[in-house]
Image (cartoon, rainbow, N blue to C red; front, side, top):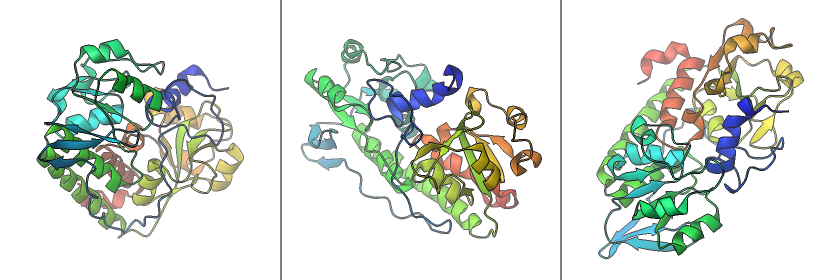
Length: 343
């Protein structure tokens, strides 16, 4: 059974923000159940350059800015939002990244970056519920929700007279870039968002060009939760983590599994014998030394070659601009020989 300490990062993301089906309550985790943000299966080669950014969903007209409401409809802001409540950590990161940080008046419980966002008051979310009275008290002209904010919660916010925009769930880096532009347009920072997107695209392109010069593709186990070392949680196909591993010149050993977030048996790990083990649960106390002392893990290539490495899971699981940081970090880990070619 997963202990609370190790299950905590998965619960937080699953129950509210980055991958559960509903933020109302945390459902029991099943081996093939999505427990982080779902993403469609992606067919991208490591030599593929980033494509053009899709047109953002926000539309500016003489009457104002038309935005999606998350329930299949639209609404119009007469001018860019000046008081924003963020209901997802990725939304908070995006708002600050495009230059709208000073316009954010509150956030939910799980925002932990940047520091300026952490200092803002919270409107709840830890238990799956938000403090609607507090949200109304901040007099926001925009509530920025995620696709995992339930339809009931969105409707409740709308019934209180609030404008709610649900930021689309991206399945590619291009989709993430489009979200940056959408938030930039909604908050009056379209030029800053465009500059940010161009900068991120340039960094992505450098990574892909550098990876194209390599010949080896090391195998990678990405550990989400190793509470049960005989059956740790990992990422299957079709997730942003799987995508970043691939773009960074690695091969995710979980890519052949069924389900986006699954448990992998120790027997299969031994058969696959990954070249690298990335500890996505490092922020919650898991260390390379702990992995080396697990029964049956001591002879794995990643362990004997000191390639069990901590990794900040936020850089791979939150669909925001820091995903490019995650891509660069993975590329340096898997291919140190090209480190001087990376930003």
